[in-house]
Image 1 (spheres, rainbow, N blue to C red):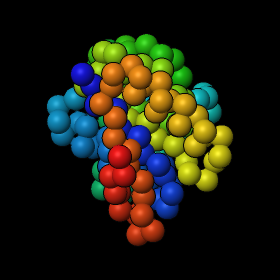
Image 2: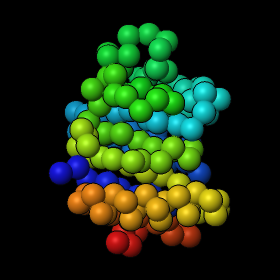
Image 3: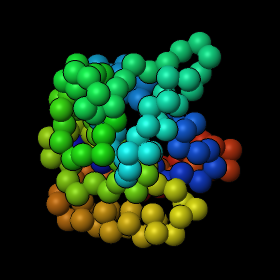
Length: 149
């Protein structure tokens, strides 16, 4: 049964948080696929992951722009899993419908967007009813993550 983690972004933006989570994913020996809500967002995230830190970058690719199956991290607007990822991230209003086929699903949403919060509640209920193991993490004022459920 896959773990499903909900990350409620409050203080630090997605761009500050996702590189750390991706690094931890790769440290586990897992590949990752990141589903985003638009091509523009995919391209912006692609550029960010190459430059997010002066002394490092995360090797990755955009779906359809190279050998997808060989990418340790693949950014896509689609629902498939072309790189055989064990971990799937949903960001930018991409909402998980199922956790099937993954070791872990990470759903990240902004607490400053009422529509995203409403979508997260619906997704929580549907995934819970589907028998998945869910945890909910919320950022505190200092940016730390606290497990709330």
